[in-house]
Image 1: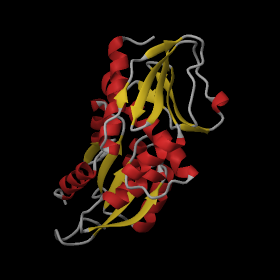
Image 2 (image 1 turned 90 degrees about the horizontal axis):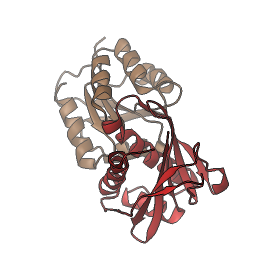
Image 3 (image 1 turned 60 degrees about the vertical axis):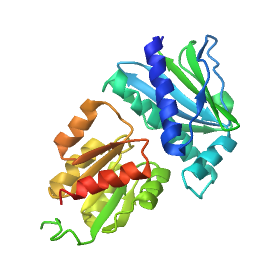
Amino acid sequence: MLTEGEIRTFIDGTTHYFETSARQAASVGSPYLVTDGKPGAYEFTGIIAISGARRGVVYFSAPRGMLSVLLMRMQETDSSEDTIKDLVGEVANTISGNARRDFGKNFLISVPTVIAREVEKVTVPHAKSYVIPINWRTHSAKLVVCLE
Amino acid sequence: MSLRPASAHTTLKLMIVDDSNLIRRRIERSQQIERLEVVGSASNGREAVDLFRRVRPDVVTMDLTMPEMDGIECVEELVALNPEVLILVVSALADKATAVEAIEKGANGFLCKPFTDRQLNEALEELLAEA
């Protein structure tokens, strides 16, 4: 389970990512708790495994449309599938890595695993996850935090 | 042999290390330092050490979380090969302990992801001021 302050760390990391990388703020909806082990996913998902002081996963999931526009905002001209997958993994990696500012050095993060389209393969290790809804331009995405 | 440049106007060779191709291209595209010339890039620490031996860069941007060999271990190896190399760690790992460890292993600066073009160039300028 996460404390309110810990959820705030991930919200701040998400807003900071969009403000800095896309130079355009994202709005974050109210985080909610999912208890059935199925927090859901969009077309592309970047997953970071967490070990050390905490165990679980953090994932960022978004539709291709959002990721393509995000690439354009980053002045990236290549919007191939490989680059989209690279981006979704990098977003997950950056938000998770930034969380170490509050969680500390023993919040160990893996390199990203990326799942494209096969949303049924996006799974979490525990029944309870927090979902942070993200709205940016006309697109919706989500950050899912599932930690022991 | 020292790779440290003789003057502030000498062209310096830059190597970019990051497991994200997107970030490698971003750094190459965004860096506006006239006297820096990108001579190669690597996607993990092991590749970086091999490339370093071949191209002998003066300056390296170094990610930390990478497969094969992570950035901290790679910093140690590069500094062992050339103690004069200037290394800017560019990482999402935002805790102070990691930044301190990277500096202790031989890195010269630390830039936290995500970064703006301006932040990247300021960090590189600051790094080169040591040259």
